[in-house]
Structure formats: structure tokens, C-alpha cells
Image 1 (tube, helix red, strand yellow):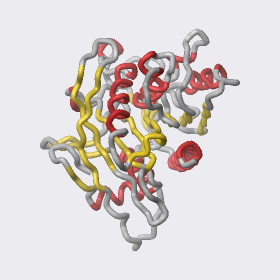
Image 2 (cartoon, helix red, strand yellow; image 1 turned 45 degrees about the horizontal axis):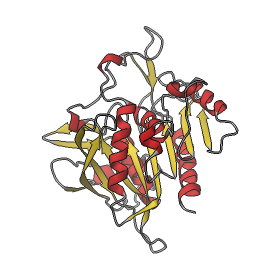
Image 3 (cartoon, helix red, strand yellow; image 1 turned 30 degrees about the horizontal axis):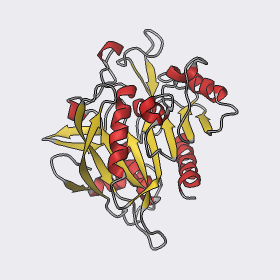
Length: 312
């Protein structure tokens, strides 16, 4: 799926098969899924403190319509991780990673519109995974203003049911989900339209794990991660779960055994990364790689959760 450089693009046949094979084992002679159309849209992110405006864009993919469903449709705002949205950038065009292709397919097939805001490319960055803490100008806290921009945009679309919006993110994007939900932040608390649900794949929960750090989600939250994650350790998310016991807002944490960071990335071999700054044990790196069984379980949990929260 190539999207920048043209206002409208469609998934190529190879991308259809990649997205489908990431989720199912279709019969060899079965017909490929129908193409999905993607459109680049303009977003304006406004810093809540200084009022600085940044021109961004996102990739908009409409829900697959069926005879049994009528719009407007529930919508998911999906936030990329520190590696960005694209696996290939060439000649002014970006090609979605297999993970983002797979998620676009499963969500739109389930009847959800999806908006993928791009927080990096418009700011001149491809990835921030290798940045030191001092170099990370695009933080999860900063990106929550990108989420505000995405929320403003989707609420203007006729095919969007503004009462049925969810946030979803991976790693750095999942940490952005947490920041974008936290009612302890004034700009979040005063937002006129709030998401109805949120899903976070392996976020960094450490900023909110301490009892002294306020964390009150604006919507029910599902966290999905591996028990063996040494990049964003699950113990911090377990601490949040413990802290929120008895809260009036649901937080569900699903941990998958023998599973690491990036477990839902189709075809990614389990490997050790030594190039990620400031995480893991010194000299040992962090582990990243797919677990297809865990991905299948996580997608099922995600779809059940979104269905329960958005399709009332």
C-alpha cells in the first residue's frame, strides 16, 4: 500500500495477500480479498501549551460496507510505534508495514473506519527507536496533540459515528494512547468528544505506574502484551492494573506467555536488538519478534472488546 505522493491509492495485489495471510490460512485457490482504498488527509496538530501548529497528514481507510450494516460507522484512530508507519520509503511514497496492513484489513473487514495519523514523516523523521532520551523530541506526551487533531478530523466526516470512536496504538503509539486518555491532563479532560474505548499493544506504562502519578482513563482500556517483553516491561502495566482496582473505568490487561515486543508483526523473526537506546539491561539489548498464536488471541480479544464498547 503506497500512499504519499498521491491523494488516493489502493492496496496492490501483493499487499492484499500479505494482509490476509497475516491473519488467516486461506485455501491456495481462494480469491484474494477485495482492495481497500486509502486516502491521504491533512491534519493540524496544535500544541496545547504554546499553541504551536504543525501540519501533519494521515491515511484514511473507510469501513467495508455490508448488506447488514449502515453508516455512520465506528472509527479507530491507529497510532504507529517508534518505527513509523512505513517499511519502505522511495520516490516520495511510503509503503505500509505488514503490521499496519494487517490491522487495516481486520478492522475495516469488521466494519470500522480507520485513520492512521503520521506523526513522524511530516516532521522529517522515519523512526525514533534509536534516539536517546535527550533526542526524543517527538514524545508520547507531545503526540497526544496529534491525537486531538485526528479526533477533530474524524468528527467532521459523514461516515463517522462520533459516539463510537476508539484509540489504538503500538509501543510508542500505545504510550501515546495512555497519554491521550489521561484525564489528569487538562487538555484531555476538557475535550468535547472522548473516545469510547482504547486498545494499547505493549505500551510503556512506567510513567503512570507509581502510586503518586495520577492516571484516570477517559475510556475503557485494553492492554495487550507479552509476558517476556523486555522493551516495555509488563510489570509496570500490572502496577497500573493494581492501582486501578475498584475504579469506575475498566482496565483489562492480557499477557501472553513466551511472547516478546512486536509479537503481532507478521513474519518478524524473534531477534535481539542492540540499537534501541535507553531500554533493557545494559549490554543485553531488547527482544522483538512475532508470535502468531499470541497475535491471533490478541486480535480476537481486541475485536471482542471493541464490539462490546462501540457496537452497543
